Length: 418
Image (cartoon, rainbow, N blue to C red; front, side):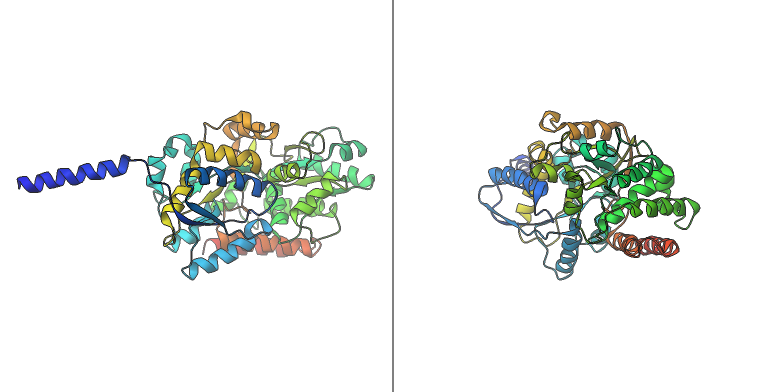
């Protein structure tokens, strides 16, 4: 018995040393799957990659990015790989309901212990951690927070239309769209390629039209998708679309150029637009400016890019090493100023960020928070796809079939909850 007790004590000591000793740098290849391929996205990834390489010099970074459609293209490829048992070492996904299908399929490792060992349970906002938690487990590490409900415009174009300040309400914005049209400028920049950007605009209109309580009720069944509030929002959405550019096939960066070249008045897009324009040499406050989406002042419609650890990752150690950088102060501050997003961590250095992002940091702490449907907070992949498709079909049909859109939105809700 004495020998057995000594053995137990010895093994416990070895385990304690292993748990507290610094982790050795990862080696081999790290395959990271993302949709960040250009502009501020690529610049932000490069900043975090440098931080990873400095800590893991023997690891070869393999960027398996699939560009286009705000991740829609990448998600299709990823689903196929996961189903085929060919996962990358880590992959990008939006935090929230988007991960639900992977969790249900048992394809992700539980990262809760990493939150404790790295101290993220103390430096990440507690409300965000609650959103990330599924049945007591956390399956991703968020690297940033984006804001979806942002109004962008060109000051010179606005001056030409006689617009001197940001509209405060949805109806005031619609009135300004008419002012742009009167001077020969498209009122709203529209990006129809892939459906998601038009659905992004619709998601904002829903929020601005019905307010955060009714909007949140859409996801828990308290607000009906075929109810009066949604039908009112659809009417306003149709009016906004009527002031948009003629082309229905623009990707979002091309639609954004309509703003920066003065060919369109307003653009509802996430704050990644700012980093894209800055990567093109444009100046915030001069070539473009911003305000909270009209009708949503005091509301922060958020989304978050995160990374996971797939079960069966070829280089699990490298995947864990990458996740540690994703959640670290150095990693987030290397990534977010270039990406055009704010850090998840509460101890991030605000001096590294531009004036818009500093304002976003302040708003994130005090505003009412609601999730983005198009970017994975409210719906899983199947629900998002059906939601985007319904809105895209409405747009492609020149906003004439409101009843069809309602039917599609109801179907998307049912698909998500199947």
